[in-house]
Amino acid sequence: MRNDQQGITEDRWRQAVRIWNHHLMWHELRPVDVAIGLGSHDLGVATRSAELYRSGLFPTLVFTGGNSPTTANVFPRGEAVHYREYAIGLGVPAEAILLEPNAGDTGQNITLSGEILAAAGIIPASVLLISKPYMERRSFATARKLWPDVEIFCASEPLEFDDYLKSIGDAKLVLDMPVGDLQRVIEYPELGFAMEQEVPEEVHAAYESLVRDGFTSRLANP
Image 1: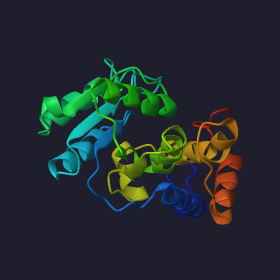
Image 2 (image 1 turned 180 degrees about the horizontal axis):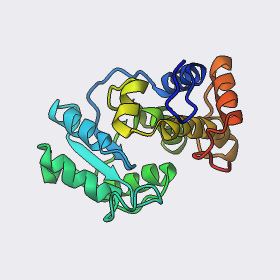
Image 3 (image 1 turned 30 degrees about the horizontal axis):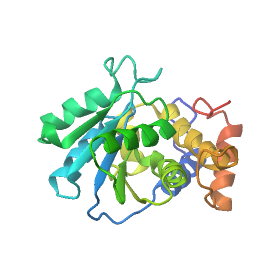
Image 4 (image 1 turned 90 degrees about the vertical axis):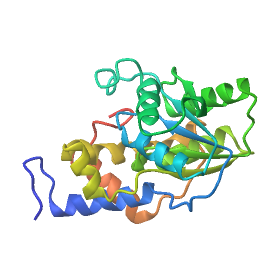
């Protein structure tokens, strides 16, 4: 049994991995017109964005995100601002980066990034969304709802669930996060926020089990 003083049993771990793997879109990387790095607490998004820029997949990179309760202390000048600085330090030219510093949720990330791109004279036909691994599916569904005529691809750091836990260090939180994102994948289409996607029965069962067990700090309305 896996138990790290936070109640993470082997069964809960397997359920979390099932949800984690469902969140990944498994898109094959290919050249696109623009990439958008979605702001969060995780500098891995900026790291992955810089890697993919240097590989030649896109000429323009947007970083989007203001602040939230979970990032204000880490990125006091805003998520996008810190991402931009970090990516420049990793070799991305400043002139290749557009900054969207106001978005407070994923819908705003997409909508406001579109406005920034339009202001720069860029109307993309294809976009790569770069996010935390467990945010891929939700960001895809949001972008497809808001940009139905744009070809959307997703990418994140290629991390297994265990690797991501090591990078964050808080097992309870790392289980809470994909549970919260799956709630949004399930519920947001009915609210008009995202495209509907099928959730396999075993993934839905894992979600319900972890919610019952109290992994709820990232639910929209716990």
